[in-house]
Amino acid sequence: MSNTRLLSFLTALALVVAACGSEAAIESTATTDAVEGEATETTAAPDVAAEDPEEEPEPEEAGPCEHPYGTDFVCELTAADDYLIGVSLQQQKANFWVAVKNGSTDAAVRAAAADPTFADANSEDDKQLNDVKNMLAAGIDGLVLGATNSGSAVGIAEEAIDAGIPVVAVALQIGDPATFGGQHVYEGTLALVTNDDKDMGARAAAFVEQVAADADGPLNIVILAGTPGTSNATLRNEGFIEALEEKGIEHEVTNEQTGRFKREDAKVACDNMLAADDSIDLIYSHSDEMTIGCVTSMENAGRTDIPVASIGGNTEGIALVAEGKVLGTVCQKPATMGAVATQLIIRHLNGEDIPAEPFFYATPAITADNLEDCVPEW
Image (cartoon, rainbow, N blue to C red):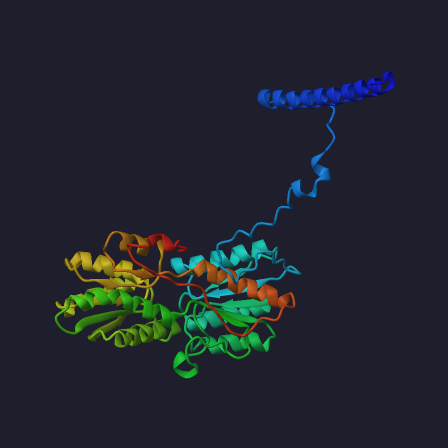
């Protein structure tokens, strides 16, 4: 090998050794820094990874918007103006309607609209009408109506419609189902946000199958009904009875009394039904709130052996199922109702086209075997 070629080889070898030594030094420094947890300034090594597209980190995808209100809730919604929404509720003392109110407030806050203005009708048709008139005079931009009565709600909705104010019905429909049919969106209103009451009645009927399997003859069933004239009570009865017939469950409804969706009224109704009949095979309750009052009545009468099929999914109702005092319940989501109803008003005011249809959500049947499927909202 000539001296020139030997010199070139040794020079190249020295460069390689020097480069390897630099990389080792950098790696050693990084390792030491990581172990000691101290920030140390070093000369940055060439970003070799940046030259290789396959090793570049992929951009992070935006995570789903976190909210508890189901697929109809638009988490990125922002109000285009400081909209004021009036929310007229059947009553504000009952846990169910408190949850509707909370969901409505949360939706408005998330969208940066004004805090809604609320009115408690105290289950009085005339008061609800006056409440809505006062809201209209105060200049609300939209109305969420949780009616005291489906029939009387027509005149109340017309007041808002005539004033050019969008209306969304929440929890129960506007218009008597005997006249308009079930889950009806009243003409001129924006939408109906509720659960499928007839379907929930049918789901409650499934709890009866085991009771029927152990019975010698037709079941003696009594019904603890919701407020007369409300679509909820009408449709939950229809769904329950139709499902019993479809399942071939022999039964006879021997008594039906209203608890007006209140635990105190339900206790009185159950007191009466228990006193009148010592051979009840099953109690069907339209609401957990009423079921709670009825269970108290049963305990006082020493009749806790009577199975109860319920609808509601509230905290106390789920607890009664867990304790074996109730066969099962059907999960409702009143906070979801209030949130979605309020959002629909905001979306409409923002210029979005809202389909005039019922907005439903999943209402699973809950027994002691799947309690985790219902996170109570009330």
